[in-house]
Length: 323
Ligand code: G7M
Image (cartoon, rainbow, N blue to C red; front, side, top):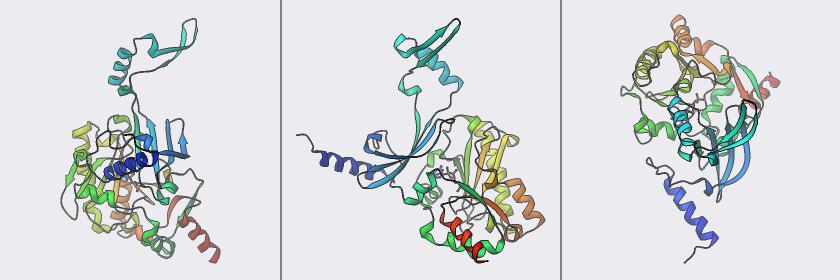
């Protein structure tokens, strides 16, 4: 007996809902045809990257597609595999110059796909292309504007994914280093943005086990052992697993972060896609600043980039008008 359109879509939604939140997903748990295209949120043609909004029954999703980088081993396979004329289509030939379109088999042509489902309006907003502006946040503006803003839960992205990692409920097999200590412990694992293969674009994130450090603003001299431990053990683990030495790493903290549970980014120095420089605070500089002045990050004015349609930007603008 064949299913009606509604039954089919109910069945697909059930399958998708069952698969969300479970650690082990098989390839068939989620399929892209379960989503209906809504609009393009952002695209970077140079990086072969696109973020779209989609819909599944009555809930929104963000889907990010990125073509994978080449490396020696997959290029060797592509050469070996595209030996039939149907796999290589001629565009033009002129003397010794030829342009073709190659169609390697699908295993060599994977698209890194991130699906956020169900996505909240915050997720849609985070991925929507927007104008940015820089804001200079004095310690007073932090206390009067930013702190109340980040404390209002409705403005924040959920930290469930962070707790799942720390509690070994998700991404467990991806963990590169795990230090259990509640004060100076952390979990280091590949960032969601990295394919986990190409070391030139290496990107890992270290998530602190200590709760209550929302951002750079909360760091003081009591956190130096934590910062030093993440730096030393994180670098050792990355060298052991990926062969990338500390002098080839960019280690930094975002201000403002997207998620207000303390974490540190580790990227390859060669990876230049680190986004706005105004958002980056190098860990060595942070350690140095706190060593020189223990409440440096409570006293200082900090500059950060922000989307002009972010509610926090509006609060800053309103505050500056009233002052
Ligand atoms: O500092 P900021 O909050 O902007 O960075 C958070 C980092 O966490 C980003 O680089 C994200 O790509 C990464 N990230 C976000 N999520 C939801 C996940 C996740 O579920 N798993 C992993 N491994 N990384 C994530």
